[in-house]
Length: 137
Image (cartoon, rainbow, N blue to C red):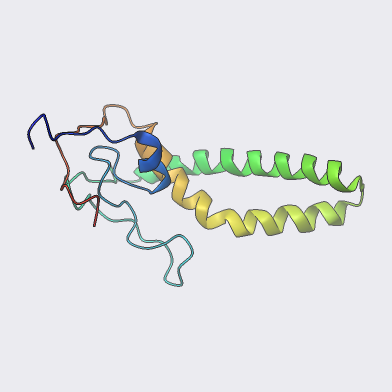
C-alpha cells in the first residue's frame, strides 16, 4: 500500500465491530454475539496474523473488564428502576436486574475481550501499513 492510498482507520468503529487492534480490519470473533453455537474467538487475525491470545490464560484478565461492565449495568438499572417505579420491593429489582444482565451477557463477553485487546494490552498498537485491504471480509 502506498502512502497516498493509506488511510488511518478509527478506533471506535474497530471496537464496535470487534476488529483486530493492530490492523483494525480482521475479525476477532468467528460468529455473531447471539448465535446458537456460542461465540468463538479466532486464534489469529485473518489479515495481519496477530495472535489474539497473547499468552496462555491471557483472556482471564477479561473477567475483570466484564465485572466492571456488570457492576455499571447493575447500578444503572437499579437507579433507573427506582426512579421509574419508586418501588422498594426487592423481587422487582431481582427480576429486572438479573434478566437484563442475562440478556447482555453475550455482549459483555465479547466486548470485555475486545477492550482488553484494544486498550489494556501493552505494546499492541495500530499499524496502518498492515491489513488485508478487504475490511475483514
